Amino acid sequence: MLYTAFVALPWLHTMWLSFFQWDGVTAGTWVGLANYATVLTEPALRTSILHALGFIGFYSLLPIALGLVLAAVIGGRSGRRYPVSRTILFLPQVVPLVAVGVTWKWMYGSDGVVNQTLRAIGFDSVTRAWLGDFTWAYLAVGLVGTWVMLGLCLIVFQAGIQKIDTSLYEAARIDGAGPVREFFAVTLPGLRAEIGVALTITVIAALASFDVVYVTTGGGPGDSTMVPGVLIYRLAFTNGEVGAACALAVVLSTLIALVVLAINRITGERQS
Image (cartoon, rainbow, N blue to C red; front, side):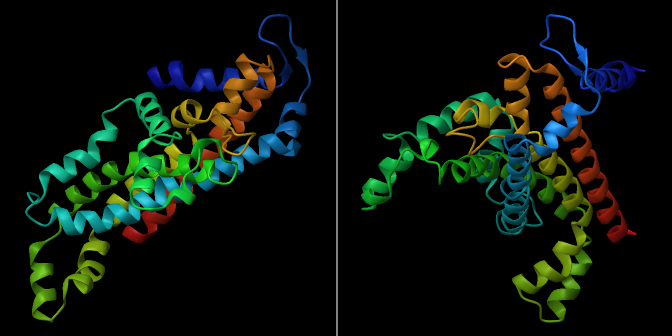
């Protein structure tokens, strides 16, 4: 009942609005699938979707890869090694993403921590206004996403390691397996379910990204970091194109549902 009231019905209403040309105030005009045609053909709208797909690498693949390594190195079977490190890495999950965006915007500034560090180690020529650079802004914002999601992946994988049967590690050691072989032969296969969970959460975060991008760059410079979440906000509340915003929202939510369904299907088959 609650799901229907707060999720299904608003989504259906958004889909209904996507068939109109409407500024949010005056009466709307029925345009059928024209807004969807615009979403699929307008370069700026298609580019925003491609940027969101590219963020999967930063928000999902990198944090999962690093989280697996860190879970094996600083976590361990006891779960007590380097607790401070785990706490620091998990900190972004309890800090509002708006605050994260503001902090990193300052750190990426001309006199921010990033440039100060580069100058201190003799790389003055590399310094730049990272978030205002057409070439580097996308990478800079993406790495913020990596930092945000890394702690979550680490905690999920650390919890998964605790449930792996100790006898499997003992058998691997008897067979002469070292830490690396033990990781690939025992730890990695034992974390398939956790990898599926982390992949689902982080992919959704990548495709639905809004807070960090909006606060740090607002989708700029130009449209180099524009993502659907920011573009939907801009279309609806700045440009008065509510119908187009709703169409993009429907396309985005459908894309997220299809990607998550594919992830669950793949990880489910591997576990069966």
